[in-house]
Image: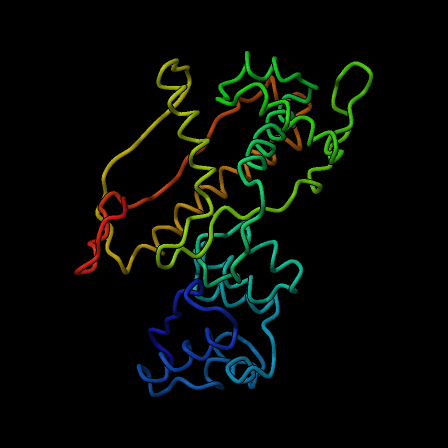
Length: 292
């Protein structure tokens, strides 16, 4: 009889084999009745399927990942991580970019050149895609809370035109967008050691926009900030919750942009910041000196 079967968090593993190997070993030590066959009967899987997953003989399918998620009532983030294991490589890489905070989920992506320029480009693309009007650099600078020099806005517009991201009609109205032509960029990466955090440029832009908001606040808006002490072993779980919230907000935005005929009139363009960053410096190793 199977009781108290539990599953480890999927986001702590890199692949299907390691995840299900730990799942089997954990439950086998806690329940003498747990076996490949007993679990297969409980979840209605083929008798050898769990054994094949543990040994790596078979891959997890999307259908089986869905069944496993429902059986254990996984939360949306855990379910999404489990589904990553079942996706084909091409789709897998795209999903991993969206779920970004866990470096175990993807190989390190080398820094790309001109990251600040790309940050500007994506910011302007999102603005134009929301407004659906071909704005000039001066219009963007005067009408929106984007703290970029006029020359940098113009450089971003020039690059957007070169890439052919938008098609405008003779009246400057958006006819078609090609957002897939935006260069790829991942703003989170492994930060072991003293390695530079690759998302810094995004944060610099966010801070500039926030400072401008402080000088000239506009309503509606909301801002919340506080110091929190997070247990080290719970950081990833908390980070996953933040990403889950971010994904939910972005999905609402995406659906609205796709279904509203006038999103610039029926919505508010806002900056979303959900970040956790350390405020205490790491102790220096004995004998180390501060660089001048």
